[in-house]
Length: 101
Image 1 (cartoon, rainbow, N blue to C red):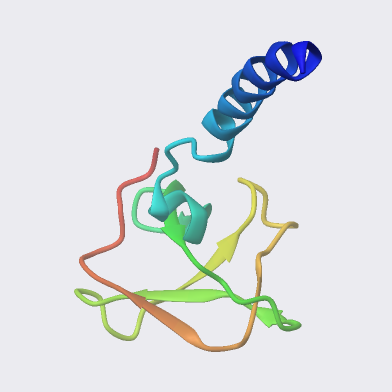
Image 2: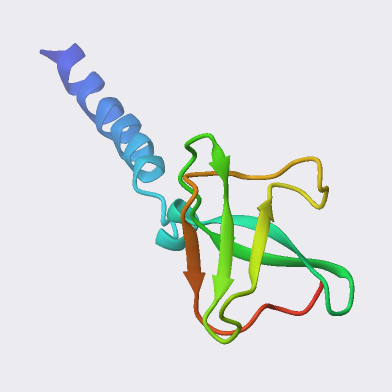
């Protein structure tokens, strides 16, 4: 019985620490959307966007609502040899293409 009285408070302390890590505050946007890049042609440069591309052996492309008909290929890095894999569907984003970084 004496061992139980010693062990129970220690177990409660260990579980409290473990649960504090399990419920760390995470942003829902960062869980869903990834930071990707597009090559903006107007003033040549790379622009950063947050988009969800569903990988399925096709290119990931985006179109902005204020620029209909203009498609941008999405890249994992600021390198044209590393395109993001997508499902072949054009993802429409609100607004216009961002300015280069």
